[in-house]
Image (cartoon, rainbow, N blue to C red; front, side):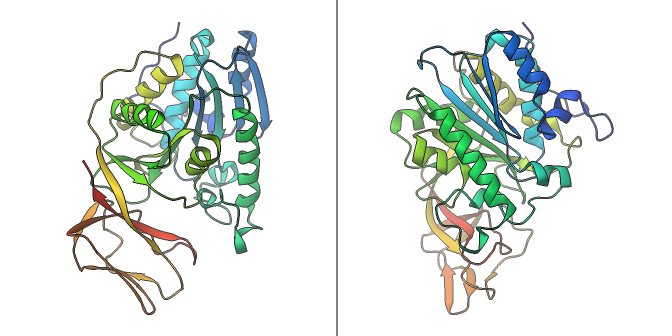
Length: 340
């Protein structure tokens, strides 16, 4: 059996990408699919960039979705997932669950851009308004259809790990956004896995911003999370040593290994307020060098939007995902408070 070995910072490179990384970034599941097919698994490719691998047994095992590349410039998770899947597929009988792998915005990945028309990770909502004609809206519909088909008839043990990297630096280099509506048992298991993956902070999110992971939690009962792993980077030039813990934890999950103890005890935060951009007059009160989880004091102005003034309401709130460049009507940031 081929074991997963976390790649080092020096492996790969823009001119020497391993075949498995090139394939996943190019949404090519040919080799992977054949290895599992030859081992007797039921393998389907319902759409470009999506593959499902099932044992065909009764739904007693877990059903897990792993997605990467929902933003085309977030390439580190593509690389680490490629290594995990390549090692697993060389000993395919080790796969202990039903698996769906989704490479999100395949056109944006190919173009080396964050998106083509609009942010794909805001499209998993019933009403899209002016974004309904965007290329990403059609891609979200494709991903939703595949997710529905994958979870249909699945047992209660459902997961979705949507792996990302952040635009800004962060006080916590790795952190996760977890929908608060997840059932308690699944939430506890997910938080334990995030600790095993050395995720430093968890934000419990009470409402959707149209993200893929929130969709899976809300409509399919999945223990789902958007997992932020460092910074955006160029394919083949990421420091993969930063992904070692999450790669190992993901490999353990797919193989059904007994959960290891946490590498860290993540700090848990609750959302205090959402910052919504209502007009083109929207401005934030800090510059673009401000890190995720920067602390602001009570009364401090966060943003202004015409007559609307967003200010800190608690003794301390920390800013996450500040982005004044989002489209009007979308979330431009979260303010969070620490729970534990």
